[in-house]
Length: 197
Length: 197
Image (tube, rainbow over all chains, first blue to last red; front, side, top):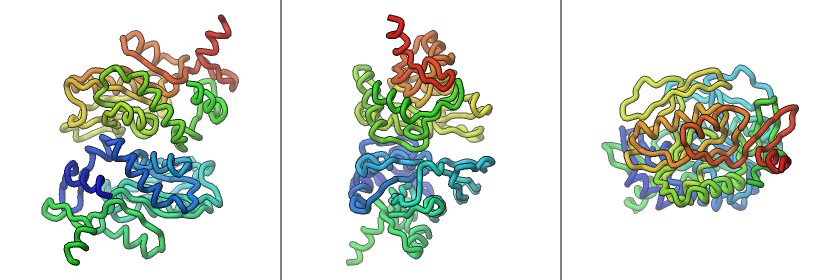
């Protein structure tokens, strides 16, 4: 998605070979116009998949999912993060380890909002090692619902999450795929392909 | 705002004389269509106030602010919550006590995103005792920016927050004002006025 790639180049900041900071438009300050385009792009890619719910995770997933849910005319649900849950009545729960923060969180969704028969589109801001995505998948499958696909704003293709999701047979739609961030330079996967052709 | 009041009556759940649960459309599952109307209503009320930034707080403030920021053509910034911050370089920080959770959180915004001269519209999902609103005000004023007003989705008028904000001279626009939740019955402030007239 070209507008997103432009934003990453012009307003993102490479902090290391692994870390791209995009708090100017995605996860602290939000460019709502760009996030509306992102949401519409997800909706377009999944419009024939019978989506009944859109599921994301607080906080940074909410903005890019907002317009996707609107266009797909499906409710948006955000999973909550907590260090650990003591009361888990009526909750779908899974554990997610964050390599960045080096801590585990329980993520949870009320059983009221995802049910057997739901076709769920999962959306998240980043895909790196796949921990959050697999946590959300686990929640959907606990409910007896099915995962229609996973929409990702920015995929770090040099980490293992994408491959693991592909190998497990899930459909992944990433709007920007980072091939590398080495030496402060952003290279996208599709540019790499075209430079080799 | 009638659509919001209908949603509160039809899809909200009164848990006690103090607590209204609205996780069916506002703070866990999100009715994005309704939240877009909410955002547009905030934008309409503040359209002539020269708003340069919309500020909210994660996570439940993001959805109702999304369309407000879009319509006002202003960036949306969400303050982050953390138990306590160790590194506060380049951050505007204030302390917010939650009576519900009985704990204090630091809320923070990067200095990059609110600056002197900004006219900030603060939006939050609930106004109860005013802790979060005053925390966000403190952040805006630390930056040398000014608070154009405070947009609230649901105000618990029977708690002290509204009065404290009024007394401090801030403009508050609440889209639904709960007079009482006593005995499981929802009464709005404007209904009360009309029933007395």
